[in-house]
Image (cartoon, rainbow, N blue to C red):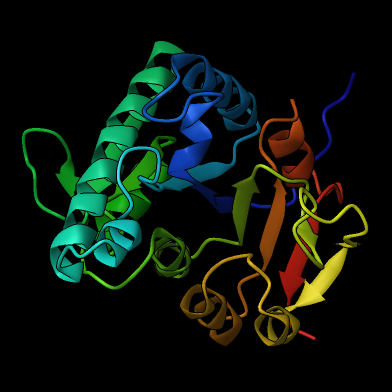
Length: 241
């Protein structure tokens, strides 16, 4: 069967740390890591340059720790370190599947990852390597959603792919409200006005200011990433009006 022509040259994929937990309540499920690696192996053959930003919520969430009394800056830095653990786990899974991968960290840790330098990241992508960005933006008070938007703009990505546990953007939480409506397409402004939990407002605003479209789709449905890159409308597209 002939593969459809990819619609994008360079993409940034945002993965939540919680996605790596699978059915667990904490940590990393290697079966999920291998599933993601297999899905990404398929798209690397399409000639698309792929960068990834991964969260750390499966190990540590800075906001939750801050709400419980921990000093916010310290809590956020701990959350950034959690993303480095996930990045290394994902790198291992990808390389076991034969994909050259580089981890670039916003916090310097030379023994484990390269320091984040935009030109270096772009060069790795041009050479066909998957690039994983760890430690968010390297600054407290910014989420990995914002880091994903920032890195996507910096590397000149054509689209930001937000892989989630649900199949797109809904008018309400579909797990709690069976009448929740799924949007096929929605504008940045409507996301902000409605307070929809797509990404945080800073991330959405950054995408809006730079006209970077966001595709929200279900991660755990086999073949979804490939379908998105072929231009098939399976999730929700967030873009300008």
